[in-house]
Amino acid sequence: MKKTNTVNKRIRNRKPSITVVKNGPYIVRDLKNFRDSEERPLPVQPVMSLCRCGASRNKPYCDGSHTEIGFVGEKDPHRAPGKINEWKGKNITIVDNTNVCSRDGSCVNNLPQVFEEENPDAVNVKRIIETIKKCPSGALTYKMGGRHCQAFKREPAITVARNGPFKVVGAIRLKDEMKSEPACPEHYTLCRCGHSRNKPFCDGSHHEIGFKDDAEAGR
Image: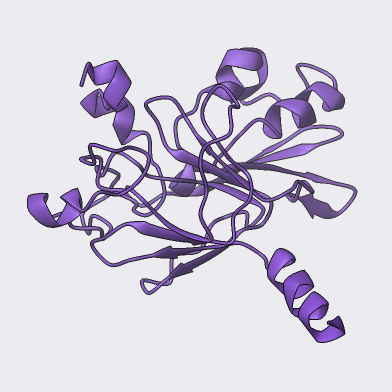
């Protein structure tokens, strides 16, 4: 009985992971917290396949449509390379990694005087950090006191953004044979529309193509 309890405990404590299948779905293992854009829980299985081609008729789950449409899950070799910018202020330095930006807009919508003007001294540091924490892709981080701060301790979870990407938090391990690594392992966004030029990460292409969830598309 003791051995059985130990095995069950190990199963319960397994850390979730996401495997990017070449030209296929995301295989998610051992995830307990899966929710929609309204924070409502979605059904989970110990192993489940999530759509990343954008064509599934059972979004956010995979239904095999990637095979029907001939989905290619590689990065666009002609995409413009990203860069890392640093905006230095008196008390904080904002680090902007454009390579993984998902065009969420939380930064400019909340503090345009900081993120549009690239001015870390426009408001107090606390407000800047609160806004950086809202960046789902990990593109925005900050430096203070000689430390590069980018990890926010959260429980592992995946949220399906409305008509947008999968928002991943809680340091869920990403396994990808193309060796793709998130800028911030604690949180990142994964493409769900199938058109990102920086697959598997979201680059905001869902806005360009007018990607819609099935309910939004009237299916």
